[in-house]
Each structure stands twice: as C-alpha cells, then as structure tokens.
Length: 215
Image (cartoon, rainbow, N blue to C red; front, side):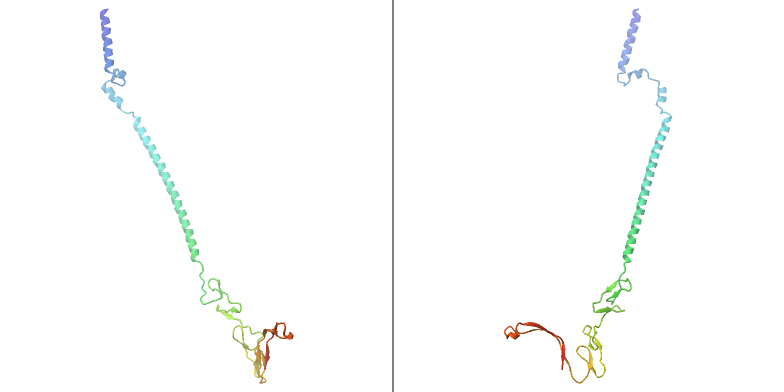
C-alpha cells in the first residue's frame, strides 16, 4: 500500500515539474500534445485553395484597374468633346472675324456728295443753293429769276444777254437803249427829322425809300 502511495507521489511531482518547465510557452497545454516532426511539416503547408484565392484577388484588382481605365477613357472622351466645342467656338470667332473683315470700305474718292458707288452710303451733302451732279460734285444753282440779264447774285454767273438796241439795267432787265444812261439808286431806311429843329421836323422818325433809277 505504501508502494502505491509512493508511486502516486512521484507521478504527481513529475507532472508538476513538467508543467513548471513549460511555463515559457504561450500555450503550455500544447506542449503535451506536440506532434512528431514529420506530422508538423505537413501541417505547415498552406491550403491548396490559397493560390486560387490569390489569383482571384489579383483578377479583382485587375478588374478595378480596367474600370479605372474605362473611367480614364470616359474622361478622355469628355476632354475630346471639350476640344470639339473649343474648335466650334474658334470657328464662331473666325466667322465673326470674317464678318468684321467684310465691312464695306467707302470709295468716294473725289466725290463730295451723292451715293458711294461701292457701299451705297452717302459721300456728303451740298449746301442749300447747290445741287449734286453726276460726278458727285456740288454745283451752284443760279438764282436769276426774275432777272433777264446781268450777273447772278448767288453764283456770279451770267443770267443772259440783251438783244440789239437793248441794254441791261441794274435790276437785270433788258430795256430799250435810247442813249440815256440810267443809274440805279439802292433803296433803304433812314431817320428823318430833328429834335432840335422846328415843329415840322419833329419827332425824328424812320422812313424807308425803295430802290429807284435816275438819269
């Protein structure tokens, strides 16, 4: 009986010593269950499905890159559309420049009046007593009426000549030539009377005398 107690005590001491010797391990219980070396090498091999999972992850990453490439292509397409819009805008500016270049430049030259033969715009206007001739020049319009002869008072040109035995008076009228020289006296307005004179000279007043002729 004592022998059995002794053997039990030795076994208990051995177990305690073994547990204390495995105190540095993270899992002391695993030491007691340690497998042989040959079996452990088999355990360290990765599962057969690991390569397949890695390839799947790689394919997934490749798919992401493909999507990124597609997005880049879409962005590039957007940039191409923007370039096309820019070209259209440039074309619009070119049309505007062309329109600006097509603005008509008048070619009046020496013309002072009338219509420009190139653009159809006005080259100028004549004064009231002038008219525009076919060459674009302003010509004076004579004001002889009712004058029959003599010099036109507006343009300085001749209003006509009198026939034989007639002469032109100062009013531009042709009168018979009887050898008597008539002188034209211009009319006008003057003050008549005197405040210092007699009663028949007062008051001073304005008198108008028309033009007349004297021999």
